[in-house]
Length: 148
Image 1: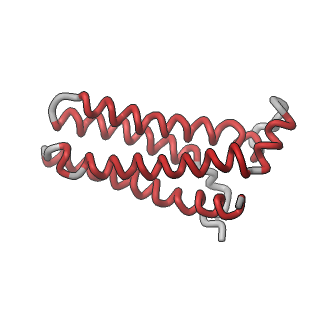
Image 2 (image 1 turned 60 degrees about the vertical axis):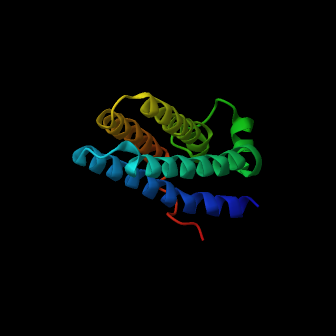
Image 3 (image 1 turned 180 degrees about the horizontal axis):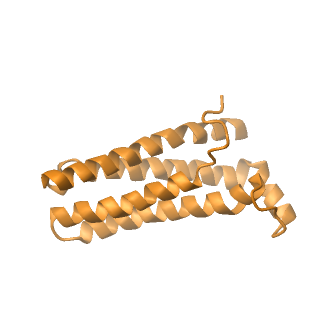
């Protein structure tokens, strides 16, 4: 089961990245055209949130149930070599992705409460941009881009 969830988690990252990039592009285009928020940017942003939710669920199942790295993190405790896989996945990856997850969901609430379509687009550009940067920073780029 570990190999299957890891494969799906690795492939799904591309869906998350594409949805994040599409959200940023849609929001920027909506801002430049003074389009209504619900005309498209809001829908695409929701897809980014859903894609990230699915990714976080797969990641949490890896972290909490399937991954042998979790046992290694618990075994070594705080004595982890910086730069190692155990350090990255035991702390940095989980922290960055949790922050991205929270950023997307808090963003949707803050954007909804922002008056005016231009204000919604501007706030969405910053907040979803931050979420996408957190996702990009949390991806283990030294690993294979697609584990098959």
